[in-house]
Length: 64
Image 1 (cartoon, rainbow, N blue to C red):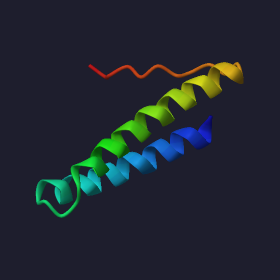
Image 2: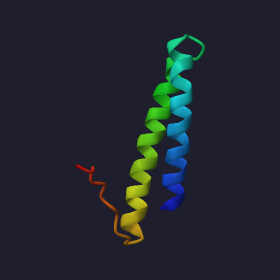
Image 3: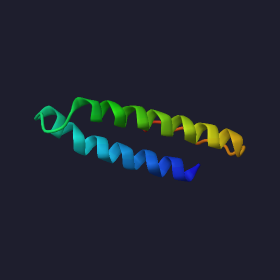
Image 4: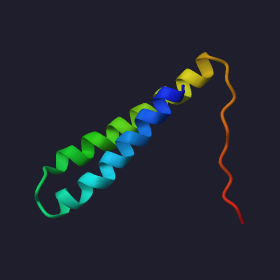
């Protein structure tokens, strides 16, 4: 489960780096779409792994 979260964070980092390139037409918009789908997949994979391993998932609560 931990590996999926690390991979997701790395993909999110890559996405943040690619967005300015897409905005300036230095990269194809499909790259951004691919990274978004990859992030979604890794999130789902992490959820599935947690359920499969019967590990509880932490729920983030925004501080008030």
